[in-house]
Length: 192
Image (tube, rainbow, N blue to C red; front, side):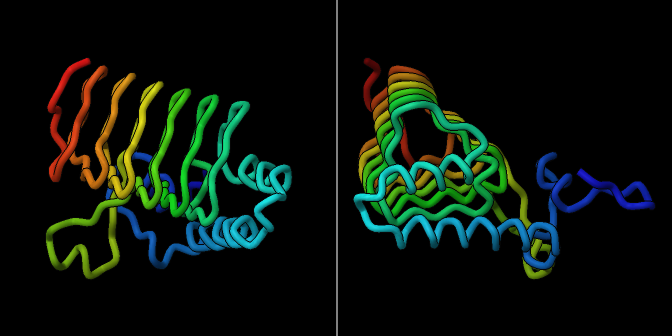
């Protein structure tokens, strides 16, 4: 990452540190998002049976992939390079990953349709929010996790191994391993 002559942090560096940063007007971040969106558009416009071409685009987009993954179309992310998926990853249609921060998925993760993972958040202070400032906090998902349809995971959340997150849940805080959790806000209803 480049640092300017005044030794100030770039917007990308601020983002990586979890500080408020300007995602809306920073030229470097805008260029990276544009490149990512073009790859997502290419991916989503491919014929469904072009599995190898689709896999190549995901490998180009993501920081890390393992063997055996399938992401149903359409799929959208912001940068791509902040996403890591483990072995045997599957997501159904309409997966959205706003990956200003790192998003890590373990092995054997299955995601239902219309799910979203948001690392980006905005200040509640009106003046800061109106300047277009935001922050990013990582999301981490363990191994053997299943998400029902229409789940939303918010910035900074960690979900442990062997969890099931029920359909329609909004995950606002960490979910411990071996849990079945559901609701808005999502809460553990059973330990397995």
